[in-house]
Picture 1: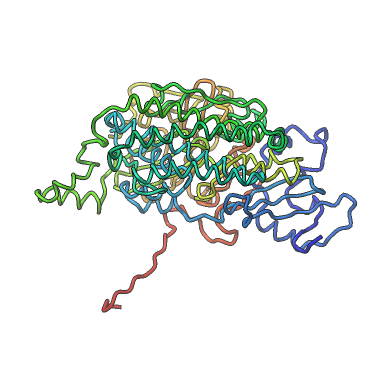
Picture 2: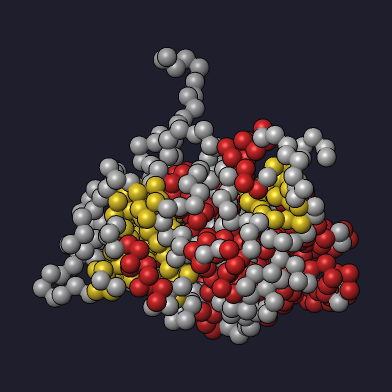
Length: 447
Length: 169
């Protein structure tokens, strides 16, 4: 054993008798506990374990740290794994390494500035974060019915393209984690094309702050349709390559099939959403089941798995790229002309040209950017389908220009609770596959 | 804009023995600490099998009567907010529980919704509200030796002093 591996008896881990006993010994309540036995070991317990003496038990187990500095933990996720040989007996994710107090920060920023804050949470799908924040603020303002058609369709376009870029990033990292390193290059290449489009539209590759309460920051640039079509026409042949490289390849299937299985009951009980919930066979997609924007006017399929394993989650995301492309084609057909933001003086700054000729417009512009706009009292929760699952925004307003409380329901934060269930009794080599298949974004987990 | 002012002349709408209000068209029920678990059990039996979100609000500096509470519910400093989903009926339901400052605790919902474990730990970490019977009542986002609960309104955000040339010290 190397020095960084700690050995301990299961009883000394401080996690209670949730492991190492057969199910027949457990009461129903304990089984339920075990179903939810997640995120359980505190850092203090972990520190105590490191100092506990080595016992010469025949059934020797050891606890190792995986992360926070580990290339396959997608950032700073730290997992404590209890191992018996190569078998993972228990697992506990320890998070908080990227915590920057974004919800507290959100209380200090006006509704105008809030978009810059929330967009940095899930940095792989920033536009969806902005979208849910904007929808929540608009609902509080009572202007959610007055958003121009074009703004709504533009939001859908950006949201779906963001879903594609996020899933392409997953293809890349999933391939990399599994050892298909060439896949990493391909996934990144395709994602880059989408990001280039975002850069053209919003000015930034990531953290756009483009979708704002009341509409969007700007209209689509000239030639946007050709750019989107270029992405859509280039992708199918690339996705077919992925099928050759991964989906139909025996090594890939062997590596993922039957790994990290989660049942439908567990997935619902743990509150998971997105591809994890769908991989367990539950057809739940907020775009279809609780439609927002104009998702009830487009045709698409909800991709559902049947085994709840890592391969299902991979296949769901791959096919969701195809479904998103289908949606984007329909958006191109239906994109109406009109305004890209609401013409409500309360939330919309005056156009730049007006500032040069009107004192009132200048004052208005100054006031809206320094003080922000007041939002009526009330509370609201809006949830939408981000690439990782349900992202929700809960805002309590006390009538001032800043949210009294802003809470983001982060899908990765909840989904990560499923890790111990997926890893139980698996191999340590499969742990990497399991983390990858959950596709957590740590910026969103820790906020 | 506050649409939740309850008209006392008509009997208030009830659901699972709790009063119902609507906030921007969203259905909200108000449970008490005592019937919190019983209400959740009724909600589960009524197909609200998934708890998507559990969070808290600290109303220390916002004691306005416009908090959209029914007349029978007394607003306290803390409030736990749960968002439930019925996959069957495609419905959302929000549940609010008032918690007084002196008794900042609530029975855990862990046995009913195991997915609330991390969320309850987050609420404990950020607001200092204890969840009785929680299997692992430890901090989740802040370091273990952190003092205070950051999302409480009396927890200062802290500032870095900025010095300008010639500024009075």
